[in-house]
Image (cartoon, rainbow, N blue to C red; front, side, top):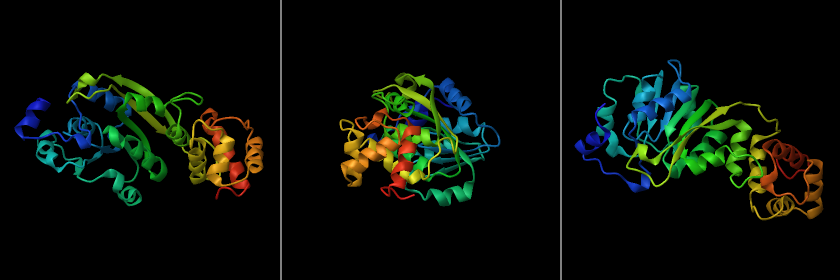
Length: 280
């Protein structure tokens, strides 16, 4: 593969700040991302934010099929060069966050996400996959290091939040590699990390995933307030009902949302359903 900068300059490509374009320029890093993902010749991969196609090519050399999404059509001539000779890559110039995921999954079947995600879409994208994805098997994604810490955080820490609890319901997340900002072109202002999220359906028992997400939203509504206050405000209920729900879920009435483990949030969800505050 030609030097990344040379290819971009050859095609007169101009970086667009609004798309958060920072392309991987290190060959060893590309290889380690693909290896960590665990993909093989039977794996269908979805890549979001394929950029100049350096990671796309590394994925395609190991995978069965790659659906590579990007919003910047100016990358078309660059990708034509970097992906030349590959017959298992389909480049799709669309915003993945706006596609009908159910229809797309019906077309491609089970898949794994491997991507160097633009920072600005990371949380909305992961949320979409968690809430709508039915055939996604896992994610191996490059994200901002600070975001990676949030994805993998434990309860009762500053990093623990709604996205952490959302991931935990579907599976487990771990940081597999920390990455210097110097391995990207152009160089971003922060370091990154590769996070692997392995989906384990049924990992945490709860009556309704949708209701669980509402409980999580309530728990992190205001981190400075107690969970009792958040329940009163979020569900427009009285204080006694909130206290009783917390007691039945084994939660101290003065506890704050970020102190509850995902398992405890699931138990609280079931209690809130029983009390009619949440629909199943």
